[in-house]
Structures are given as C-alpha cells and as structure tokens.
Length: 630
View 1: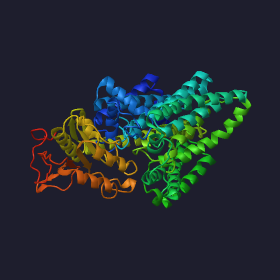
View 2: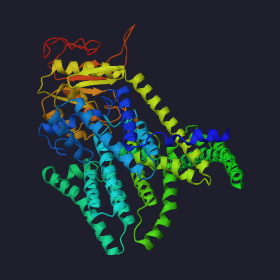
View 3: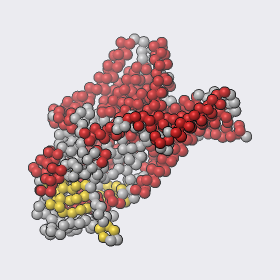
View 4: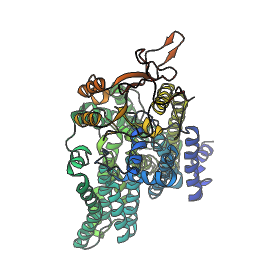
C-alpha cells in the first residue's frame, strides 16, 4: 500500500507536459484566464497611471521629454508608448496591449531561464507563479502599471540575461554582444534594472571564461562598452536640447538631489527605517521555510522506508525549528509568505556554488553547467532585489517588478536542490512532488485572492472616450463627473491643471497640461515652476484631487505641502464645484474626489452630485449639463 501511495505521488511528471509546447500553452492559458477574470480592472485612474497615459500623448504633440515634460526614469518607455499611440491610436487598449506583449516576453524569458535549471513542470510552475505573484498582482500589475519603465525594464533585463546565459552555455561572442545591447536598452528604461542586467552579464562572461585572462578582460571591456556607451550618448544628446539640470537634478537617473520625502519613501521600501527589525523578520521567515523543508524531508524519508540515523536527526532538526518559529512568531506574525527570506537563501546559494565553481574555473578555464547557470541567476536576482533587499515580500507596487528571477530561484531550491539531498530515489521523487504541490497551492491561493480582490473592489465601469476602466465606485463617480465637467466647461485647446495626481482626466478628455509635471506629490513638485505656469499661462480650470500621501511624509496638498501654490490657486481662481461627492439617503455625503477651480467670470452648471457655491450663476462655456457616465 505504501509503495502504491508513493507511486501515485511521484509519478505524475511522467504522464503530462511531454513537450515544451504543452508547458508553454499551460503558461499562456493561465495568463489568458487571469486576464479574462480581471479584465480592465488593472491600474488606478488616480495614482500614477495618469502619467503613463498622458506623457506619451504630450510627446506626440511635440513636447520634449525632460524639458517640457518631467520624467523620472529613462526615455525609452514613453517614447515606445508614443510610437504605439501613433500606430494603433490613442487609447487605453493601446497601452494595455503594450503591457500584455511585455508580459508575454517576460513569461517566455522566465520559462527559458528556468528550463535551463529544471524540468518542464517546474519551469511552467515558475512562470505561472510570476503571473499571479507579479504580473496580475493588484498593487503592481504589468498590464497597466504604475510605470511602463518598470515593465519594459523587466522584459529587457530578462532578455539581456537570457542572451548572456546563451553566451555562458556556448561561449559565443555574438550572444554576449546581444546581451550588451539589451543591457543598454534596459539602462534607457530604468537605471537599477540596467545595473542588474550589467551584473548578470558580467557574471556570465566570467563564468564562461577562456584560458587566457587577457581575452576575458577584452570580452568584459567590449561588453561594458556596448552596454554603457548607447545610454551615455543618448543622455548627452538629450542634454544638448534640454540641459543637464533636468536630467541630473529632476529625473533622478543617478539618484542625485533626492527630496527628503523620496529618501524617506526609499528607506521604507529598502527596509532601512528599522533595519534590525527587517533582518529579524528575514531570519524568522527563513526559520519557517526551514521548518517546512525539514518536515517534508523527514516525511519523504519515512514514507520511502529510509530508516537510518539521518531520519532521526532530521526529526530533531524539525522540532528545534518548530520551537524557534513558535518563539519568534511576534517578529513576522503568522504571515507564511516565504519571500522575505529569499535574499538569505540566494546568498547561501551563491556561497555554496561560488567557491566550488571558482576552483573549477581556474582548472578548466570555463564553467558552463547547471551550477554555473544557477549561480548567475542567483547573482542577477540579488542585484534585482537590491532596492528592497531587507524588505522583500510578495507583490507590492514596486516589488512585483523585482521578483521574477527570485521566484525561479526559490522554485529551483525547493523542487531541485532540496530533493537532491535525499539518498533514495523514492524520497527524492516524493519530496519533489510535495514541494511542487505546496508551491502550486500557494500560487492558487494567491490567484483566488487576487481575482476576488479585483472583482470586489474594481466593480464600477468608468466609460471614457478613450476606453473603459473598471475601478472602485468612488473613483468611478469622481472621474466620471470630472470628465463630464471638463468636457462641458472647457474647450479642446484649453489648459487644465491637475494636482497632485489624476492627469488621466486630461488623457480621457484630450486637454493639455500646463505643468511640466504629471505628478506633484511631495518630492516631485517644483512649486515655483508650477506657480509660474499658473500665472503666465491661460489656464482655464484647476482640479485638486483629494489624494492623501502619508507614505511621502506630508499628507495633504495645500495643507501639509504646496501651501504657497494652493494660495495662488485660491487667489487666481474661484471654487466652482466638488466632484465625486458621495450621495446617501440623507443627502450628499462628505467624501469627494476633486475640488474644481475655474477662471473668474466663468461659472458653471454642475454635474449630477457635484456641489457648486450658489454665488456662481454665470453662463458656462458650453451649454448643457454634464452627464455622469454609468
């Protein structure tokens, strides 16, 4: 009976996923099902996405990136999206198509890299885990992300790593040359992702090795030249048109001149607010991962009739780890997310493989096996996680873009390295299937909670001239009224300023932004320049979003920051509406999304649900009442 049980648990890999096409089809079907269940629910019309919608449109109108349009990252993503607008039309669907294509590239690269380490089933599981833990994660999706620079950067860095791995396997110069070119493109999307690709490529070159070190140095020099010269030349060319100040002081390309609010935000992301606490959490989660691994290893040995000293020793280790986990439960509570421990696990993998491979590299001149690939991917994953190294966890507005290769590494350690420690073949098969089952169940749980969140929270359809966006009822109400308000009371060529976020209103209505910035939250607002724009340009309407920013320190626009700017708005414009007010059986509620400020002498009718001071009774710019989009 025991043998039949082991046969059932350890044999399924022989009966399915017999070809690469089947494995890739499973990955694509999982993505398609996920997108169908979360259709049009990605992103937020208020936070970040307005910049991604509106920046490429401003470039099509002839404005200069970094000069007329402030930008925080490399120039590639908005230029690519502007090209997509030019070819396929200006709409939300165009942006989503770009995000979907990049997601497919990411998944194919992840599968290919994982396939070099593992079997088809494990590689497919890695890619499917990336779908649900990263690509469709509700606070950091790839389809309509907080910035396309991150999504395109992930895709290009993974392609660069794939080319470098190809060079590692075959020792070909063209593969490393391609890796250098892709690394250069990655630098032009997001600097830190370009650095990760650079580190990964250099690791592959050194592992590939050749007998004469001079030739290795030459290959490294060529790779660095190809990877660094194009971005440097591009930024020099841009600086000739807009100057160096916007590039070095405003875009944060080299992380210079960071505002205190941005520094504090990055400290929170990195885990430096309380580094010892962050380290304690990492160690606690590592103990939990070790507990699960030791328990299932012991169980596999018992079921495979491996009755020896190792079984009893492993049982004692399991008991000790259980005590440690129980005693340290307050450090990380009972969150069983394993990924806070991934930096420690990757460091252990690098330490384990690094010395042995170095010795073999000295004797053989090259190292191109599975261990070399595992080491290169571990180094690349650590470099990718550098910005959140003390505070890694599943999902998040930024972590989704740093996790893909770390997920491959965790799957490799769980499904390949851990079973390899077992002496008996039956124990290895049983532990492999157990690890895959645990990872698959965890991914399924994340998928169910993600779909449930999307459908519960984003259930209201915001219908605009440039596409439909499913969002919360409050966002739908506020943006629908704002779109109708702007369309009724401004002309197509009018300037409309939006603070601190929410320029998706301008994208939906095809109005122009008088400001350099698309986002004016703390650390991203240049107040004097914004004041000059309001004073010197014929701004027809100002919308101030009810957007709190406690993560950046100062929370309220006009109260905790930008007080001088708010004073200018109140002096030069008159209040003409509150948009998105919640209606209750007792009347109009107190929550709203936008305060509207019009030019003096221009009063308006209001959208249904909006409130306007009764003192304004003048004729609106366009006749008719704004209609709330249902």
